[in-house]
Amino acid sequence: MSIELRQLRYVLKATETGSFRCAARELGIHESAVSRRIRDLEDEIGASLFIRHHGGVCLTYAGQRFVSRARKAINLIGYAKKDAGVIGRGEDGVVRIGLFSSLASGFLTELLRAYMAANPGVRPDLVEDGPSEHIAAVQRHQTDVAFLTGEPIADGCDRTHLWNERVYVTLPSDHELAPSDEISWADLRDRHFIVSEADPGPEIHDYLVKHLADLGHHPSVERHGVGRDNLMHLVAIGRGLTLTSEATTAACFPGVVYRPLAGEILPFSAIWSPQNDNPALRRLLSLARVMSKRGKFSPMAGSATNPLAGQA
Image 1: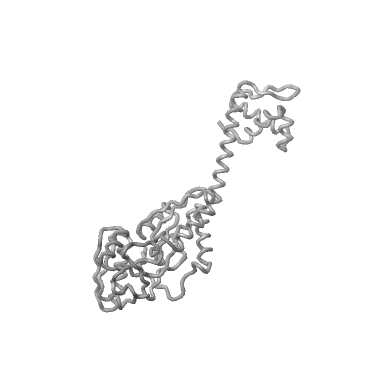
Image 2: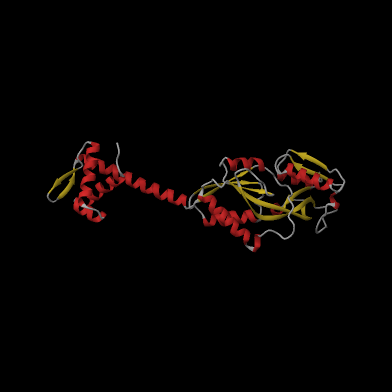
């Protein structure tokens, strides 16, 4: 059975006005068009919907049952159109975000706060994982955007550099280097380090090995099967030093202090698929670019290295 939406509208308008002529006038079409389309509909369903008389039309019993359901159908279609329009404008829906950064402070925290304030109908779905897992999820459209360290390259994906953070050394508050305003690589040459087996532990390990090996020293790095919080407590009791990004330093742990590592800058980028048609993603990327260009969160001066970067 083929029923056109305009046929339903003609039936409803004729029911409201009690006349094909009045219905046509309000719809802005010829009376013959209303009469013909309603007749076609009656032929299609095999029942008369209206009793025609000189004064106009009135519904048959079949017409009454039909109009009751047709009115619900028209309302549902209207709701569907409204819902789709809201989602299509990015005013509602879900944006799936892959994280490889802390939400303790910094650019990403401010971005999400501003985005949720401007788009209260959009629900951010946040997932923590490693760079390779995030990139694969973006490529499969399981994740809308991932915020990763460095400038990762992935087939079929776009990328933009949004902000930088300094690299910090995490050490016990009673450590001999704690009074320093800034720590150099030379200061770390003979130190013992601890990292998590989970991300970003492997990236920190490789970063330490690379930079300390440049000084002619093979670093002592111990892996632990704990998360970041417990790793900080291990630092506090003197098990070793570790590295972290600037945003994470907003989180305080008893017995732990953070000191910047001289000259080390950590770039952060957004990566997404250009084939992703989620309007909520486009609004998020647009806001991220605007915030990145503002002075507060623009890339820091100096030559950016690529520490802790996850490469595809």
